[in-house]
Length: 407
Image (cartoon, rainbow, N blue to C red):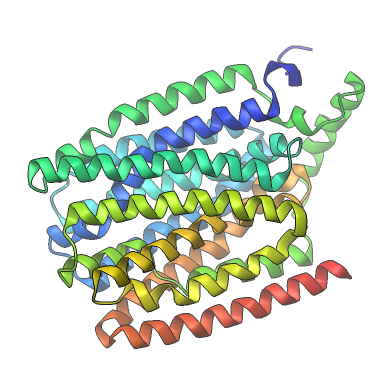
């Protein structure tokens, strides 16, 4: 059969490693931009409310945009195409960001870069979920996230070094990111050549006819009306509520610079610290997830609730503690939260389900960033109280999801 991919073309862990390298290289690119997003907007005249709006809109675009890209990928089966287009958008937007020179220009590129992420992520996660079925969902996603975070640490450090050497010149600091972006596209193309159909990792190996039947059934199923389980919808509500209760790093970094706690290069270094913590917590909670399931996610709203208590403090120690806690919450979101979806939804609807999940997360991120940015003028206490209320509501939704899973 022409174009058929045997599992032997690459091992499941080899495939996850390959995608980990792609994500690592691209994380150097866009995490460098995210690490200086607040200071960059501040440098072109943005206010805290504008930073909150732009960062929230960017995250909303990144997540809610997957509502369209996920189902489109499932219907067409062109997972690699969506992944390539998404990575290319990010690889072009970030180098241009440092030269934009205005609030409008920087804001547009921030949102466009996040649009690229919305294109690629459902397809990437769907392809990863097939390979992860062979090694453990939690372990597979956590391993990918850990590699991803190597780049997330390197990118901000590179940006910080160039900013320090050039006296805060954002053009060179972000322009150099074209190089790892190009490398990521190259590795992705090679990976596509090796494994054009990642779904074979999850198909029955015993007979070619069984594999062909599975492919046909998948195409038919993908064309049917979307019917995702009730448990999935409760779970997505929990995910959205968690993100609505915590602000983005853009608002946090604006506070660090505007309150003159740290310099712009130091903000990038602190972001790198958060990405390192992200990778560690992804591995820890991913491994625990494979043993105890969704219950491990109760730690997420607890950690998220106390982030603003430290992140919006007025001392360096407080801010560092807030950054570490924020990184821990992000690591749980990016690994364990994704792994749980793969265990709730069949393979033929997986990109769709990741897109749906992202709608809730996108709305949550937009609300969290916007409200936190607006509350910033009213002081830290207002932000802390808001977070406590939202994260308590998230715990209730997760409890309901667990009850539904037992029935």
